[in-house]
Amino acid sequence: AGLVFMREEEKLAHDVYLVLYEQWGLVAFRNIAGAELRHTSAVVTLLNRYGIADPAAELGAGEFSIPELQDLYATLVVQGSESLEAALGVGATIEEVDIKDLDDLLASGVAADVNRVYTHLRNGSASHLRAFDRLIERESGVVWVPQVLTNEEYAAIAGGSAGNRAAARGNRGRNRP
Image 1: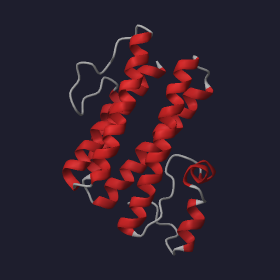
Image 2: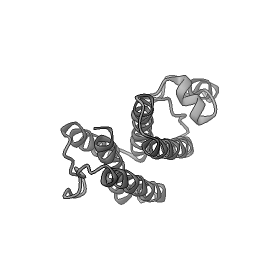
Image 3: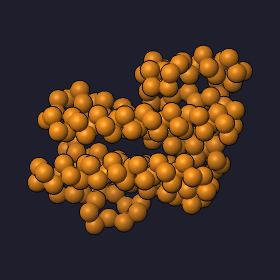
Image 4: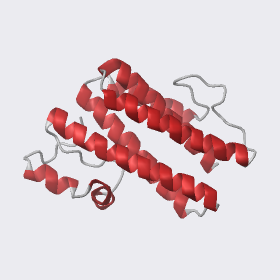
């Protein structure tokens, strides 16, 4: 079940980032979408190895077999269309959700090969989150405040306390694009 969910969650990130790239033209969305495609391929390899059907094999862009991800996709695309700042916030939120879900899956105990892939995906999501954090600050002057992760979890990834960074820049309380 974890592999099936992660397959579609990685697809969701890829598909949302492509829509946001088309809308805003920010190369980071295209680049991170490419990384998400590689993440998806790694999960598909595990699905094949374990004889699990790929739930997204016949689905097009923006289509998901898991209803909650279908709804989330629609919500994120609408949010990301509001402004570039909102689109970058969508990216940061997606990466936070990925990290949280991967941490939960890793904590549940998985086979060694699955653990390696999940750890790789988590590291990638952490890198993407740091990239979105920098882009949000560069584009809007706002310091991202975590929406899913705790401040401590986020600080461990971003390299400092988001709340302290925001306060130091006079952006206290401004956490959502």
